Image 1 (cartoon, helix red, strand yellow):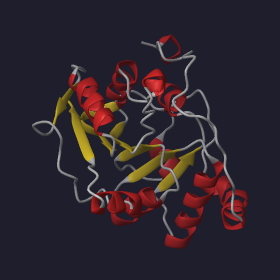
Image 2: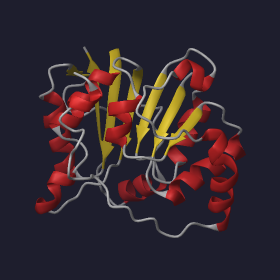
Image 3: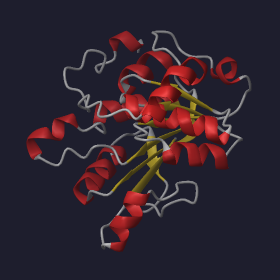
Image 4: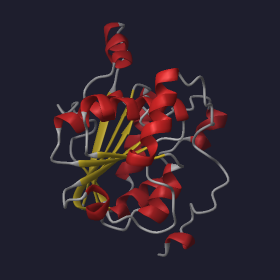
Length: 229
C-alpha cells in the first residue's frame, strides 16, 4: 500500500500535545549549533540509512525520546547500531543534541516531527531492525484513550517497516496501558510475542531516574517486546 494511501496519513487525532516548555540556555545552544549536523529534515521520500549514517548497519527508531538520556545511553553502549530518534518537543531535541556532543556519538540522528508521518513517508518497508517506544504518554483518562500512540493501525504500520526478525519494544509504568499495548500487539498477525506475556527488562534498556524512583515506591514497569515474523 502506498504511504499516501495508508489509513493514518490524514489522521485527525495527534498522540501528543505540543507543550514546548522552557528551553534552557544549554539546550538552545545545542539546538542552534548542532541540529544542522545531527538533525534530519522531514520529507516525503524514504531515507537511505546507509547514506545517512555512512555505513551499512542495523537501524533502530526511537519514538518520543523525551530528554534523550535513554537514547544517548543506548547509542553509546551499542555503537554497532544506528539510531533515528523522533521527538516533537524542542527542549528534548536540544537536550539530546547536547548529549550527542558530550558523548561524541556518531550513530544518532534526530527528526523533529510526528512519528506516524515519519514512518509513513521516510522509512521504507522492511528497513528497520527495531523500534523503541519507552514510556509513551498513557493518556489515562478514558475520553483521551483515542490519543494513545499504540493503536492497531499504528502497530500495523510499524510491522511493515520492520525487517523479518526485527523487534518493537514498548515500556510503560501504567498497568492499564501495558495491558492495552499487549492486547494490540498480540492482535497484529505480522508480529509474535518474544515472551509469555510481558518481557523482563532487557539489559540494553537502562532504567530511567523516574523509573527507579517509581520502583522504590512500589510502582510497576512493564516491557512488551514483539518480533516481526
